[in-house]
Amino acid sequence: MHELKPYKPLYKIYAAILIAVIILLVSFFIVPDYLKIKTLDTEINNLTQTLEIQLKLGPLYHQISARADLEKVSSLNVPSKGWLDRAQIINISKIFQDLADKNDLECLKSNPDVDTLSGDAEIMLTHIVLTGKFEQFRQFLFDITRLDYLDSFEEIRCISEQTGKKYMLKIWISIK
Image (cartoon, rainbow, N blue to C red; front, side, top):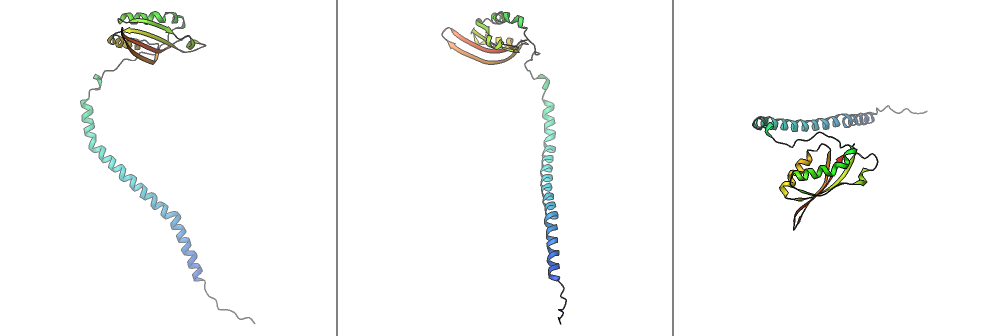
């Protein structure tokens, strides 16, 4: 007959399984939460330091802003966006000639670039060549910026010659 072996409890196996479960729970739930809390603590400390700095500098900022009179700051008036009618493109040379005459400049050339007028183009390139003194040219630039159909400047070149200064402009005009 078979002899029955005495029953030995499997304490070691149960203890190993229990320890493995505890290690898994700690590594999947407690450690990530601890790391997340540590990161949040660091962020809180950084924000607290930033708040303290802002609280210290706030009165200084308000004092400086109260002293600054923002209404007295001058700026260039920006004209409203407009268009030059296609029928008036013929007069563009005359417009720039009149502006040059107004500012005591000589307009050597003022003509639109025909290649930019193809199809339903909404902007047109214009070449302008002037001669005269720089002070008058500067005033000419201020006057030209007041034109509501001026889109942008592409190029402004100043060349010194024996006869005086020569100014070459490439500007874009909005057309409709």
